[in-house]
Every structure is written in structure tokens, then in C-alpha cells.
Image (cartoon, rainbow, N blue to C red):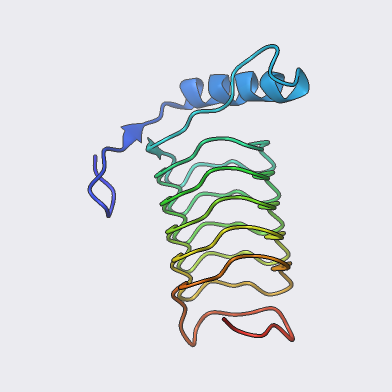
Length: 158
């Protein structure tokens, strides 16, 4: 399968994903001594339920998370370069210092998310809901947005 940029997308079986998440949790808890950092590059996670998942510092480069439920997930420092998050539920997600460069976040709900220090360089934000989002020190350079993009109250647009 191919994503919008024509890179290969790896189909992810539920059992394999659960094993990756378990090993990632162990890796985080042991500070890298045990388990393994989640490598979900190019994974097809479209419409997957990852509510409250701990994906801190996970590699999700080019991952397809279109329509996924990430409500309350921890994605601090995660690599989401070029990821497809179109229509995803990112409410209350922690994306502090995450790399979202070139990511497609169109139509996603990020209400109450933390994007402090996140890199959104050249990200696609059309129609995304950023209400009550912390965008302090976030890089929004050359990001694409439109009149349907909802910004936090008092936020000075790009």
C-alpha cells in the first residue's frame, strides 16, 4: 500500500502492534536497558485505537494514522515526520517537542493538546481544531492552514 507521497506503507497486525507497544513501554521504563523503542515507520495505523498509548520518543516517520484515535496519548519527542494524521482524534495528546514536519493534520481534533516546542514546519493544518492547545515555542513556519483551522483563543496566527 502507498500513502499520499507514494512511499511504502507497512500493514500492521493488531497482535504485532500490541507487542511493539509492550516492548516500547519496557524500553521507556528501563531507560533503554530492556525492551525496544517503537519503530512504526511507514506503518498503516489508519483508524487504530491508540487511546492513552505511551508512544513517547517513538519513530512514526511516514506512518498512516488517518482517522486514528490517539485521545490522551503520550507522543512527547516522537518522530512523526511526514505522518498522515488527517481526521485523527488528538484531543489531550502530549506532543511536546514532537517532530511533525510535513505531517498532514487536516481536519484533526487537537483540542487541549500540548504542542509546546513541537516542530510543525510545513505541516498541513487545514481545518484542524487547535482550541485550548498549548503552542508555546512551537515551530509553525511555512505551515498550511485555512479559514476552517481553529486556533486557541488569543493566538496570533503564523
